[in-house]
Amino acid sequence: MDQHHISKIIDFLKHAKQGDRQIFSHSHDDSANRDVHWPRSIHKDRTLYKIECSEEKKDKFADLRNFFAWQFLAPHRGVLIHMGDEFGQRHSWNTKVFEPDGALEWQLLDAEGEPDYPFHVGLQNCVSALSQLYCTKPVFWRKGEQSVKLCCDHQNNSVVAYQRYLQGENGVIVVHNFSNGQWSSYDIPLSDANNIKGLRSLKEIFNSNAYAFGGTGTYANSSVTIIRNDKRTPTHMRIAIPPLSTLVFEETLS
Image (tube, rainbow, N blue to C red; front, top):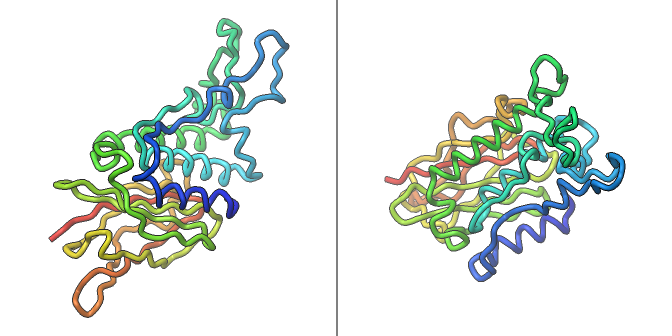
């Protein structure tokens, strides 16, 4: 992701509490813009799969998983997904649903007939896991954009981290890596503003690079090191970060 878009994401997070209430969606026209009066104009397709221009499949799908993770986990008032994009639909909907190929390319999820099946079903699994995470963690939806605090904005590395919190619930820290960079050890700063003086531990509860999601399964965090100052106050969390990924850590307080 270029610096312009990273700056927009950071600016959005910094001003989310003062901004408009938003529902995160992408335009229907980006996924179903084929003119029914024309022959099948595949060159005009604008699905997420087509918009994501990485040359290697592993990077394309890592970017797609990252996109959906941002869409679900960033501060907002709801999420809308265009059907088919959640498993990497390659072409815009064919509105003539009674033709042999139908409106959706369900064959992409056929393990026997589709060579890229692991990527497509992995993306579907990832979106399903994000949906479950969103629904079961009120920190993501109960107070919308009011429940976010920025932890770091390492623009040079395209790494952004923020806390989602809610009174009476375990907070979470979300880390997005929008670059191809990868780190076996990376320090995310924590401050008093994050209200984590009583932080006892952090547990990774989501990693978009998981093997089940079509990722490599590397750079997982089986444990997280919390760095403390002389007063035993947490100052940083030390984690591994895969390329083009999103990680979520749940807090446990003393």
